[in-house]
Image (cartoon, one colour):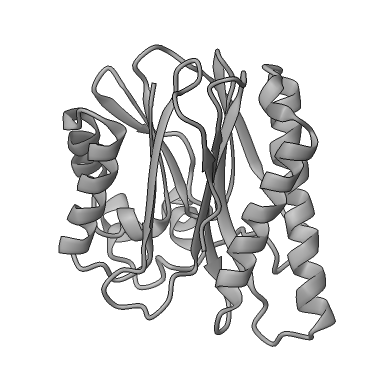
Length: 258
């Protein structure tokens, strides 16, 4: 399921268009997303969660993660702040809370294959974007026509590449590319990666589950984001291209135009 809120208009300015598709192979969608944007607020946040573990368990975990983030955002009235410190603290604390909630459920029900979820989230202040992630869901930025992946996948294959055990080319089609090294929920503790980046006018951002980059390489993503006239066009064209490539996994895309 998907949880989102968007008032008419945009903030400082930011325009978000999101979509999630089950794909052409899976029988249910374990991805969830949220975007909380209001023209009257100073800050906003968006997030994607890609569930893992057991029948329906991944869907439950990704929904719980998104619900927990939304609850914390509204409770803290964080749309009214432009503080980088407060936004970073929100991302960290809400995801740590999500981890504890899902871990406790796994423990209470003695689940053989613990449920969990990857996550990538971004909070936007008028001058900065703060990212938080665990797993292989990604955040990209397109600036001056050049695409940059702002997050690094937490995965077995990436670790192999970093240790010079396989090449980048070998990693693309590695049989263990689906194995992630960090996620929300299966373990009692989770190590999040948080980073802060300066925003610039006309930046474009993309948050996605790995169902997108399984079928599109960075050059294709860069071209589609650059050519799109609107965030709607970007989301639609990215999704259609991934489906034409096979749609072997759930696909979730949030395009952010500033």
